[in-house]
Image (cartoon, rainbow, N blue to C red; front, side, top):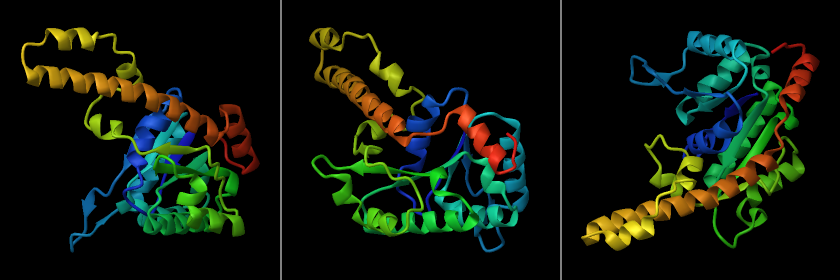
Length: 248
């Protein structure tokens, strides 16, 4: 299973979803971040053709990957996929996260349109509705994207594939610990808090307890969202590749 997490817009949670929603639920998957790493003469970063060629070659050599495409590289990557005809078929699915902000929704629509122009069929594009507010429905928050898809069904948009805004993501930023490990932490924080000698220690322990509780609840939500994505199994992916004339 090889997935690309992509959107023309920044601030839609691509890296968060790649690391916390997709990577832990795809056995053996590698995380690959595609960022602009070479600066041009005028300081403009760009993704070179040889870098894209290396990415293709590496993807063909492994079984599973989650490719996190940075917003600064999306334009270049789209152009290069057009040049390397059929290279989009190296990905089993394109995961397109979106958030309620109208600007990001418009960028999401542009992303879907450009992927469709490359030849990516609707069944290989999936939306994730990110940073939902409590009490607001997907239909209410994402009326622009859903209205567009009603007229132009370019992607699969399951309203169940939604994630609420949660401070746990900020709490774990920079940490190597995953949500499952955090949620299964056996430490008796209440006992330690009762025995702590000063307020600062009590507060620090209280934060760890709160993080464990948040991790447990977000795990349930991430599992539900991943199931709602309805990603093809490994066998299905191989079959799809045979239909397009590409072998994994």
